[in-house]
Amino acid sequence: MNEIKEYTEKLFEDIKHIDEFGNEYWYARELMPVLEYKEWRKFIKVIEKAIEACAGSNYCEVNHFVFKDKMVSIGSNTTRKITDYKLTRYACYLIVQNCNPRIKIISLAQTYFAIQTRKQELLEKEYNSLSEDDKRFYQRNLIKKGNYSLNQTANKAGVKNFDKFHNAGYRELYNGETADDIAKRKGLRYREDILDNMGSEELGANLFRITQTEAALREDNIEGEYTANKTHYDIGKNIRETIKKNHRTMPEDLPTPEKSLKELEKKKEIETF
Image (cartoon, rainbow, N blue to C red; front, side, top):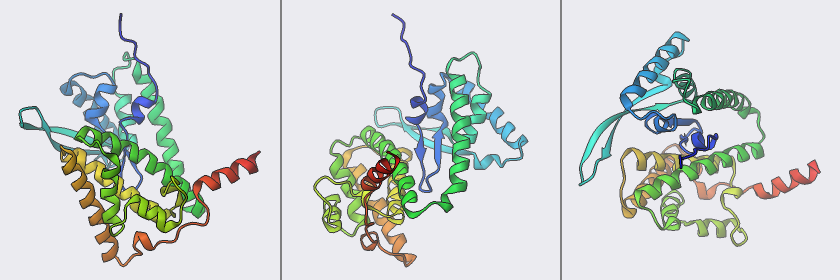
């Protein structure tokens, strides 16, 4: 029986990453198989055409196509260097516009990246006019996506105990506090989500922790649970030191909002009803 592939937007969502500023990006090496290209030498020609199109549109191509060298494992404790690109939504859009149109998934990809690019333009334009609570909802949504990507990468690195892994990052960011300690300090009920009870500034610090850890695990080819935990620990520590050097308020000293995001969601549902 022939394999039947389900072509949905989830294919692109699953390989999407988010940086510390909330910007979405994709890696060319991960996009290539989704677009059903099997050889890098053929896919790189598509990328080169997309770069030309970017330059021809008076956009700075290096802002959309970031060249990267990576070391990847090829077994028996051996690694080799490969080239890759970190791509913006616009770069992905240009790539799929230059792909073989006979490939079934390409039409879906063209629609997906066109819509996503427009959505992000609107979000960036409107973000500064949002209320504090709406900024919280926006940041929380980015964290959900970021944590999903982080967990996938951590799992590939060998992480089994995810509570311990996440607490490694929390402890250094929050001066020794685990997730449970943070919940107790905030006076939360049992199993109430600490992230739903943070302001936008505190959520931003955690988004930075999440995206930087995911990038470090992936780009440094981290292997083993101990090393992954240590990486998360070090990222949390570095972010805390940066906050301190810039004389900003430490995460544990930031105020807890009066209402959790869950409460605000319920309020919105009641008002809508």
